[in-house]
Image (tube, rainbow over all chains, first blue to last red; front, side, top):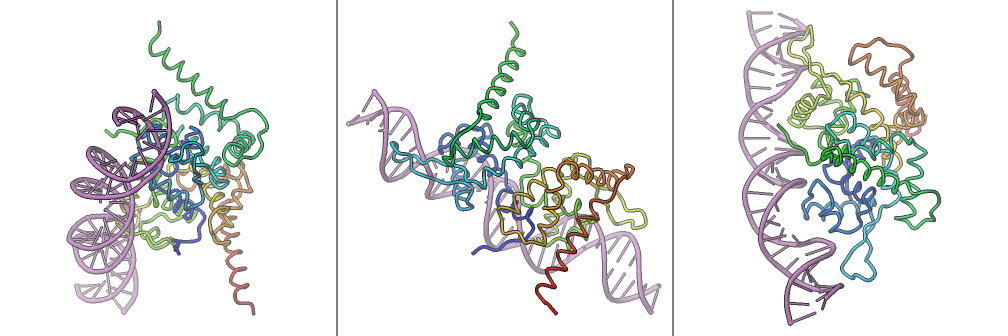
Length: 168
Length: 168
DNA sequence: GCAACCAGTTGCAATTTGCAATCAGATCGG
DNA sequence: CCGATCTGATTGCAAATTGCAACTGGTTGC
């Protein structure tokens, strides 16, 4: 049985998520649709070490933010899914992106998705969360894909950036 | 010159705030009106160690989230103030409180303020941020004190809790 | 059968954390 | 003026965490 520093909701949230990597892993599963160990290991720009990734995945599963299941048709592979509590981190991640966009040297291309979600407001967050529930919890889908819209905006920004860098 | 893991706004935010203590310090300055080293050291329930507090204060000043100035009339004492970027963390902290309130074993009394801010929505956050600007940046005040309302609700919850525990 | 791929594990050095004790200067009470 | 207390820290040390690189035991595709 674990003990907590205090009963403060902010402090308790920090005890689960207050480190440099946990939210990066959740971000990649959430926005990057990475569901396997290898995807998460090699897919992110930040370059997480394999032991740290293994530890964080275990910790997040224990904390009830992720579930791990076997991949049918690939015996050794595990699939990680977001749980409802993890999906409810969307507003937190949006605010985090919003703050980072204004107060850190974030690149334009990587900020496009953050801005889109920020501008969309709670209604868009809600639609995104519904989409995540469909993907990760198997609930029925409805409405257009927010994820696809984010991805499209991101790729468009990348294309503009590269054409601006190398104009022909 | 420092280098960053990536240009992602979420990752960059985590590089500044992604640890167990930085946001606790900011929370205590913001909601607890603690402005001195000793207040911060002894005032919080979580029991931060003095060397960690000293390190975090230094780091937060370096990161531009706090300013440190001399206390007139108490030569040795320093006053720490929030900067505009730190004040803009209000929505992030509200979402953090909201998530913790729903998804961690937070106590009722300590969740009252979080709920009030959450229910108040962006308009209340904005009023609160204006109040913080008045307190920490010296800008002119207008409107009723959000901080006083939060504190009042908190103390009422404490009183109710203790009378429920020891009914006479 | 074998190379490539899978999810991790292991060993190790460096860093960070947490605790207790300590510090020098400032202020207070008498 | 003098000891006691308060100030914002610093120091030493043990334990835990982090990060890197190499490795493991098994699986899959050809």
